[in-house]
Length: 141
Image 1 (cartoon, rainbow, N blue to C red):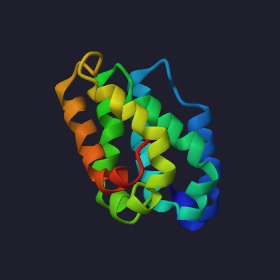
Image 2: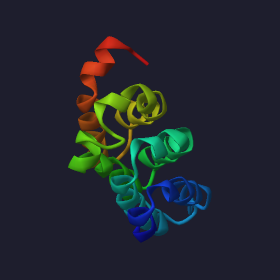
Image 3: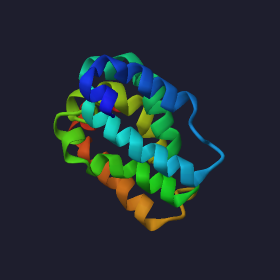
């Protein structure tokens, strides 16, 4: 994060490499990566996010729908980060880019028959959907 503080354009490389080397086989490492990713996302400008949008949010969506409850919960906690939600990459102005990627994972978590087994993950998924409900009523995915 020190590099991004000094030169925000390095955020593209940092996010790209975080996503590229994502530790899919280790839930504990994924938790560390998600924490680091949150810190990076707080620092990078919107221009950087647009360059890595698809790969970044596809990775976040995979974490949201993870069977490991801590990984899913930690990914959903990104939406509890006030700076990211109010002015950052998770704000409503970016919903048209985020929701097509994230929404299927959220729906999978709250599906009555096959939803996520952890009630906290279900609740957090509902909270994220609720955050974007105004946008969702305008455009259904």
